[in-house]
Image 1 (tube, rainbow, N blue to C red):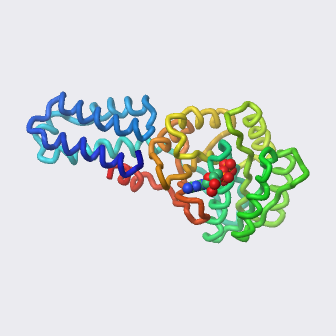
Image 2 (spheres, rainbow, N blue to C red; image 1 turned 120 degrees about the vertical axis):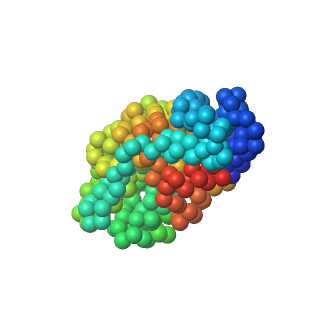
Image 3 (cartoon, rainbow, N blue to C red; image 1 turned 180 degrees about the horizontal axis):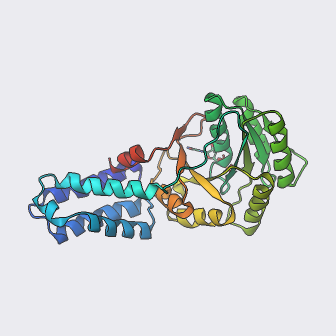
Length: 296
Ligand code: GDP
């Protein structure tokens, strides 16, 4: 179910309810069940859907709903508020400042779009006047350094990596030191991603994090991961102190639900979304417009 379809399903559920002549508990439950089904299909985690349903029932006053002329609006507002709350962990993430060296480390599974997103993030900040640099601490995947090098060269962003060195911690430290000396104010460290959540990946990530002391760790997640989003995000959060999330591949058949799970699991905000393979297909994530789009 793509975002637009989810909005359609929820709108239909709300329309059905507002067409009902009498709004009683049964009609309200039917409407909420319909909305819950739509959210589950959009990969929102079961527990979150259940909690949302309970919260809405608590805040929506059935009598006001029965008497009110605009039942649809009242319900829509309640769903809107709930979804916004679920996407807001309550504290903003670290934001880099121009002229002050910051280290930002990227983590995520292989294929999530991590390397592409590193360059998008660097390019976004470069356009804002930052002096970014990219460090490839992925020594696991053959071709990772070439990919980063190619992306960085295209965007005219300095990069650091090695074809020979196999210790990601050593490369990360060397890269960060070099770019600090060169007065770069946004040093981005790309770490390796594996197919599965293996212990070795987490150990390596923890070591890179300990050695480079990042100001921010960004967890990159593919939006098509589905119901696995919560567990995956939580596993990363338990190993390194994830402070922000970027959801990739929100173009195409993206479902919005993973974003909610990632926020819940990491207690960190989504800061950007990837909307294509190209370097500028990258958007600042804004909760309210996202939820509006979700609801159609
Ligand atoms: P990594 O293994 O996590 O570093 O993933 P890559 O950066 O190599 O990306 C894996 C694939 O996903 C590549 O083909 C990217 O072009 C593609 N990709 C990354 N982000 C997006 C996105 O936002 N939208 C789409 N459609 N493709 C993306």
